[in-house]
Length: 314
Image (cartoon, rainbow, N blue to C red; front, side, top):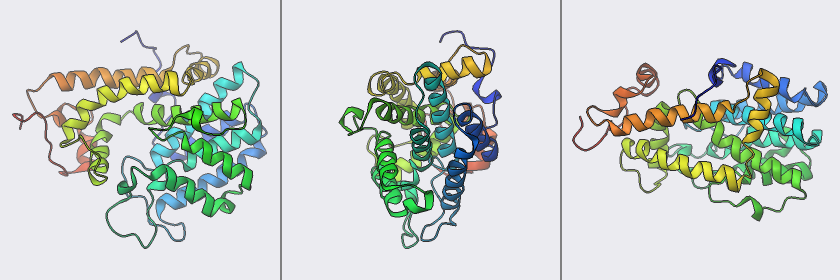
């Protein structure tokens, strides 16, 4: 991979601290908009937090360990950074569009949350329909987020851009900036999860989500590890073409705010992929033992799973 910057993404913010993340989102928002306008986003985050914690009436707590509140915040922070970079180089988004983009980030995966009556399995079974379920949740509870009919409709269109098979140009946005916001959320959803410092370890969680949802092509944990390299190649094409290169706005943000002329998201992902190639190439031991944060796996994952690597590895 290309030479990386001396500053790494994980060093500029502790993304494991939800309060620090939402505060950083607010700080970025206030570069361009009145501080008072962020109250709506902060209040919306409080509602989303309750939803994921099982404190929103009629819903269970989040029980998907990959698509969880941490990922939601990572994606929303990436949205804020992309929007900042865009605003620095173009006519800024209106404050209303900025609010809708961040609200879409907060709500884009709430479709994984089960309703209270739904006690079978986990929310992972909704993997293939979670985008539509997120839109339905907003339609049913838009008053909880102070969203007008028009705002809720726009937020829903932006959320739809996170569907892996959705073509952004097929969504009926009213103008180019709204479409750009959709591209930002689609990009942020990918950047946020794949740049996470524990991304490789969290792939084990994703495997079990796919397994419950009967996603074909993944018979073992190692299948998902190996195919993630192909997924990244597809992701790069999707970000460049489907999402119109919106990832470049992250570099504008990091240059302006941290004096680092690099896309720290892409650099973090490339480091993950470099290490993943080494894991796939080395079949001398079970792949779990080669993950950098094995202690993290033991703490969060225990002995769950088949630990399957190549067929001859045990």
